[in-house]
Image (cartoon, rainbow, N blue to C red; front, side, top):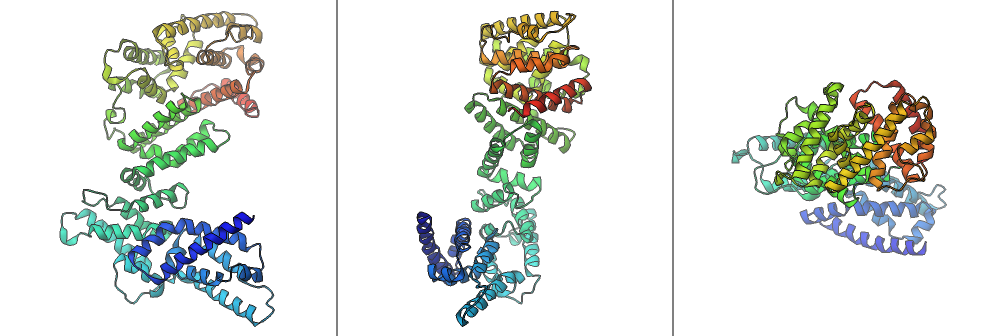
Length: 560
């Protein structure tokens, strides 16, 4: 506590000096310095309030004899009053100075003085000349007879001027000077969260100007992006696209903000990931190829850093679903060529993957799977065209459309026929992309053997949980498999339970035998969640399987 008190005292002296400097001069330099320090000063005010609320008014004046000067200087600084929650916190601090039971004329005088400051703050935005003098100077306006509607008219005037500047960029007589646009953006830094300034913020974001370099202040972009991410302002997607195209750090921060939300959330089932994703506006903004490419690169790095973590794979798939949905809503025909979104992929492969399974008759899914498998295998193993990258690039592309791998596993278990080699290869590559040809061939042999044993059990008059586990090689006596191969076999077994006529009766028993570690329990829950999510997108009609999957997932959610 003593250490915190010492730190507050040190900060108190620092901000007292700052306020004195800001109070004595109203130059562009002091305005800029004020704007840059507003977030830190607000945090100081918050800490000051936490300290003041624990004291009575007499203790406050003893501990901080110049508190009145500090708060008064703050009250008369319009930049501070305009910023975020500073005005509210300042009111809290002033309320701590009021003595509820004044004992002498000094207490009464202090109360009267404090109420005067509170009255000033509450009426500070009536927008008379005294209150907006600093703003109007920064905006380039001369003193005039101001009235309550000043701010609204001033904002509308500036918005009109910016739009005219944007439309008449080559008419030098009607253009707003770049220096003035830059100064305007600097003045707006502490004001971006005020509703009255929203039209001006939008106009600045969408006014590109005709200069070779960016004219708006980076701090303006940062302030707008921060306010958007924290839901302090609401902007149309077009404005956010302009923001992220003009200021790359803001786009990167938006992606990191999304990752932080996903990491901090306890249970990231796909519906929740989809809500986070759509709320971020990233899929809609990614309809612009430049934004898509940057977002995709950050997903690529996340995939490499986490060594292909299932959570990252799921997030990429959800992003792709949302992106394609937004792309479809934006325009019936693609505004940009597909190659601009996936420049390192084979255009013919992208075209096949982009086919929504919902738009293809279910009886023809096997043809699409065969085509996808052949295209991928040609580039992964034959390397006929090195320009489309190696196995990782092919796998990273396929990850976006990972629903096809799940469909392949389902198709394998819904048919008693000999499993097609193309489907086996696609599954082996999807789960073990780093394997060479020989290792992948061995995985295909193992999957084919498990498929054969499961088909035999399907014809058995009575299914047993132990027999099913043994057929899948999931018994404790079985030799351990590589983790990815084991995951593939478990997913085949889960598909069997969801689709086989007798699988429903023993599903709970089989899952109890399988889920002998928290990691596998989490994996099974994620598989069921992903399956339900995919069925929703495909509008799959499978009432009994849906009911079982939902019940099993609900039971497992209490364990993961």
